[in-house]
Image 1: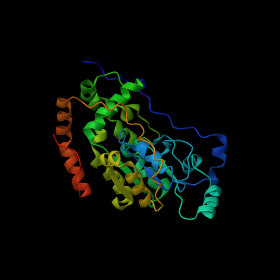
Image 2: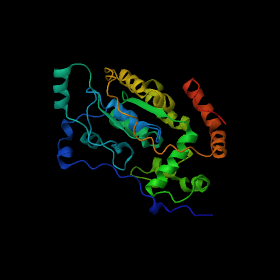
Image 3: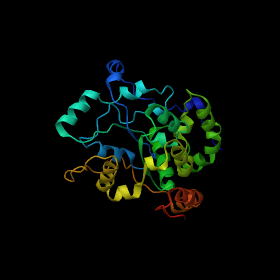
Image 4: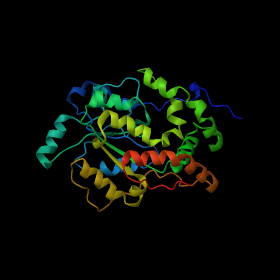
Length: 289
């Protein structure tokens, strides 16, 4: 049986490094007032790109800021990757209406400490958006992604067999140690990331369910412009024009798991999906076998 890599062989994804100018000018930059928190491999890159087309969404310096899941989160570092208060004021004079500043990072949903950090740094009125995909397909896509990156060396069967050993103690360590990071938790969490209910419960505890818009990837892939405009409406800003809509981004290679594997995964996730449906008070659009 192949051995799981050691902690040292799997490093976390580094945070973007703001320039000295951005760090020094952080007091004159805005804080994010909404987050797109995940889930990974669920269409978050595409959704973020679509809502960012709006002139009412302020640009930021990095696609994924990651600061709220990093070792040294602070208001200053959150501000350093955002636009300035002066630009926001100028846009308000020129265009009118509301302007929003956001951060998008699919690791935020899964990181156990991020909800508390987000509330402490960004306040209780933060708006949250989450996009959830069939966890069976998400797990398969996640593994293929890690293989393409060269991070994962095991095949899918071995990887999910090794997952409990790889992740043992990592969630608690991230909760207990303020500066802890974990490449194992980030990269090898194929099944764990599909337990959506327990992740959403942490966010609901920090912010309340009324602060979160929960969407399904299947709806987004079927009508990406409709989904993105639903998000913009929820954020209180006008919809994007429908002309020149970009194609869906970052869909991967699209290869599905073998039927037997897909059945095993969906059987595994069926109780978790039932728990999620109870939490949300509505059905989820995924088969249970």
